[in-house]
Image (cartoon, rainbow, N blue to C red; front, side, top):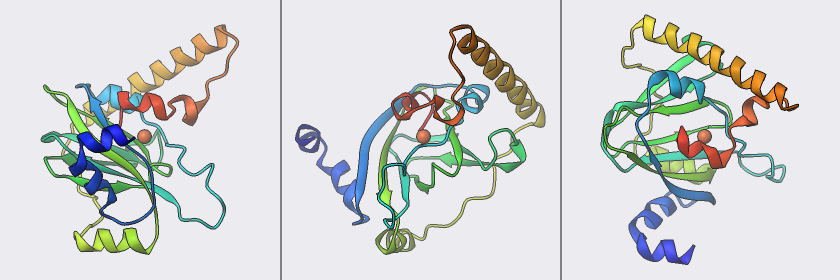
Length: 192
Ligand SMILES: [Fe+2]
C-alpha cells in the first residue's frame, strides 16, 4: 500500500533488496508466549497453492526488527517429533529465509516487550540465491539448549490441546483441518 510505503521507506527498501519477485510483505507484532504455546501453534504456510506451474517456489524471510536474543523461531520437519526441531535465536538484525510450507514453524517469544519482524514472501531462484550468498547465509542446525522435561511437557500439552480442539469442532459438526487450521491471518499470533 502506498500509505505504508510512505511511512516506512527503509522497510520497503529492505524487502526489495533481494531483487526477486515479492508476494505479501508486512510487519508483525508478537506478544510474549511460552514454549508449549508455540509448539501448539506450529503450522505450515500455504504459500504455493495459487502459483502457476513452472514458477519458483515461494519462501519467506523473517527480518527481526527488535532485539529478541532469547526468543527462537522453532522449525520442525515433523510436527509431532521434537527430535526434528531446530531453534533459531532472534537477536537484533537476524535475517532468516525459510521454506515455511515445508517446515512446521512458530516463534517462541520470551519477551517481556513485543517482538517486531518484517515478513516477506519471495520467489526462489537465482536472485534470491545470490542475495543469500552475498550475506553469507548458512544453514542453522545448532540448537540453544532446552531441558528435555520442557520439551516433553510441551508435547503432552500440545496433544491435549489438539484433542480438546478436535472435540470442540466435532461437537459443532466440523472437522479439525490440521495444517490449514492456522491460516495466514491468524499467524500473527504465533509466527512469525
Ligand atoms: Fe507461518
